[in-house]
Length: 235
Ligand SMILES: Nc1ncnc2c1ncn2[C@@H]1O[C@H](COP(=O)(O)OP(=O)(O)OP(=O)(O)O)[C@@H](O)[C@H]1O
Image (cartoon, rainbow, N blue to C red):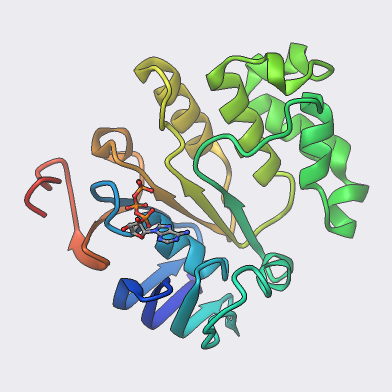
């Protein structure tokens, strides 16, 4: 098992606000790791820092052995395209999708590397196998879909490339519990091979027993392994 993500001494924030405090984390190939914590304690900011999307950051982040951290004081997103090309897929919180585009156009938009584009038909099939409700909707504009279907599109787009690390931010957020559970189950059914998945989620129960590890986050620091006994209010 090789290290896919090695974070060493990461601090990050926005302007004067420091959200992540000197954080270390290792995720290995084949691992699914969950991160839980209350709203505002920095889960999204940690995922953003890995993707180079915070206001500023410092500390080392190795993705598959390559440094993607750098010390940055400004220019959020300036290096994100390079990080993505090194093997990062990010599925952001909420549905960052374009209402006028069809499901198929959305999935195609995720196949932006040359290999992924060449292979997009097979990749779409893989996504449609994971999310069967989308199969009959490929020509439908996403603006007409339900919340659960939109989430499937947004996650499915992130699965159109062969990433080394998939970052998924609150896949069940805002969905009815049953729908949230089925989206999570589909996501966890993905054959990771030698890649890894890092999932931020507020609902610990959705992760427990389904991922390899659950880590708690409180006030910008990791709290070690968590379980359903991990009390979010007192973490
Ligand atoms: N773009 C931004 N600019 C300024 N401050 C931000 C920005 N994004 C987040 N913050 C602040 O950073 C802190 C951590 O927020 P973050 O979204 O990382 O937490 P979270 O644990 O992911 O919560 P949530 O589940 O609501 O996303 C909060 O105080 C938030 O207000």
